[in-house]
Image 1 (spheres, rainbow, N blue to C red):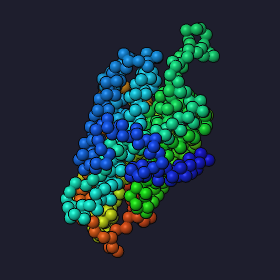
Image 2 (image 1 turned 45 degrees about the horizontal axis):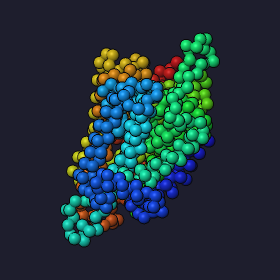
Image 3 (image 1 turned 135 degrees about the vertical axis):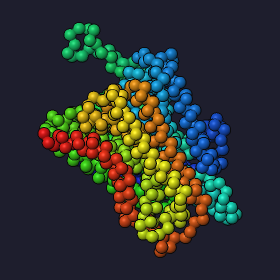
Image 4 (image 1 turned 30 degrees about the horizontal axis):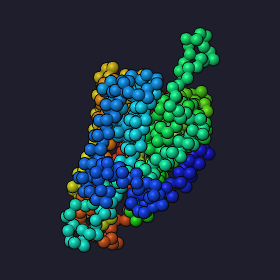
Length: 569
């Protein structure tokens, strides 16, 4: 319980100054670090061939985002399929098959890090550092860039005053420069923060070396042939970006449950704090970035309320599981952490799109599993870096529309009306999630042998549904117990990963650009006030109803039935 309060307190204390700094970085304001970073930035802009001061329309911005993903994805896919022939492979990792390489590439490209391979055993050092870690650094900043562009659109665009002064409201809305929005926070924010966390984790014993792993003889070995190789490598830098970038893909297969990846109580605290530090920072960033501090308070207050409720329920559920003695509660958990820190991690890693673990989620109490599923279905409690706030904006627009209908007022956000065109685009996102998750879960469970799940009962339904939910939420955690290294799982999850990432990032940007082109009406006593506690409660209700109730049947058949079967014993 002490760690519960300490993690949230530290996240809020550190998130406020970091949020103000991040807002200044995204605004392109002059900063003390310009002497250090400007030269690097100009070199990268010259290499790409872009002018950072030149704005883009939403089409240009989205196009640059998609092109950068296509180029990076193709390069990493090729790297994974040829790693055995390349240097920095002291443990002799083989080339990946096309389908496993495809899934791995799409997973890390979408900031998901869902792993159908076993950590260090199937990746070379080069593939880990150049392919995996590069995507772990860049893809969170891509999500941040998209939400920054969306916020600019909601506020009228960077050229709002010029368009109004010249009477040319139909000119394209300037939502910023994509390349500048990715490069500046990567160099000035994410990399320095990762360097700090890497040093702190190395001080706790997390490996940071290029040497191959040593051969050791276990204490219970009877012959020399039973010697085992301990895999090492530059683990600490990957763990730092894994946690801070809401990535989740670990160096080792069991992730942060491995002592080498998470050796001490202090390392566990650092990694737990890193789960939500940057998402909290993004929430604090909204105020100084948009110039609307009350709107930032709405965002932060709503997210924090849902986060505290979810984490508190997870702690209660995992500690007081029905029919569970001390041994049952400890199943799947590291003795050095116990149920409390494990439940807190499970809640926070699914509130964000992180997905890393320090205990096996397959062994969580059924209601704790229900909470983790609910967190991912909402995907906006904190969410991924940028992606969580982008999904929150979707709920916000839906909440404004529904509240306007219920009160008889014209639905509008920041003085701009939400009309049929915007609602149709929102409907695409609302319907896409259940169609994809329920459809593929039904197919996988209906075809004998396709799922390869270890549990044929209620928990088996949860295993399959969890895998697809984790992919769509760009989370990456899993109940495991699945034979997921197959062509079906690799390809179907790759499709779900892409559908969960790209529409959720691009459609809100399109809506923001559409709203920015509309004439802004001055706020009056008849305007819907969204920056209030009443609307925050309304918004939470909309999130719960739209997200959880439409999945109630599968949740009842899975974790709820699993819980009742344990309680009846």
